[in-house]
Length: 72
Image 1 (spheres, rainbow, N blue to C red):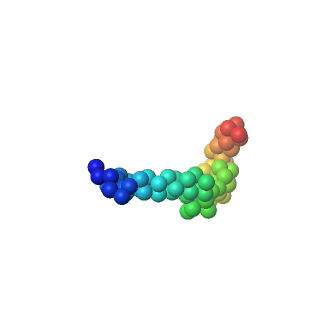
Image 2 (cartoon, one colour; image 1 turned 180 degrees about the vertical axis):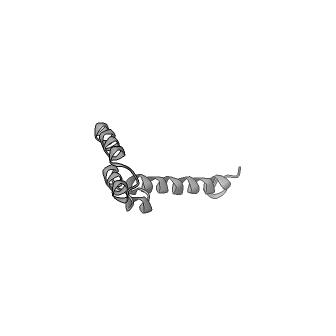
Image 3 (cartoon, rainbow, N blue to C red; image 1 turned 135 degrees about the vertical axis):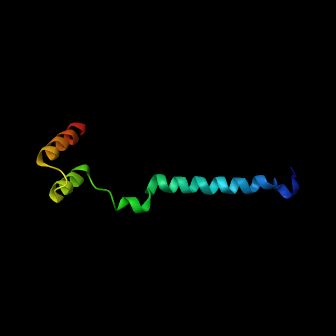
């Protein structure tokens, strides 16, 4: 390793990469992934939508609804 002009060769470049990675991580922690925010639906909304489309029967709807309510 060379210690010319206060730089440590390739290590200086690695620290910039680490700093940028940390800043990106902080952004995602505070703001989330942008394209996923618009897609957030509650479990109840999804269940209602599936029942309205006829994807599940009334019995399945009631069972899943009880399961969702018991977890809250």
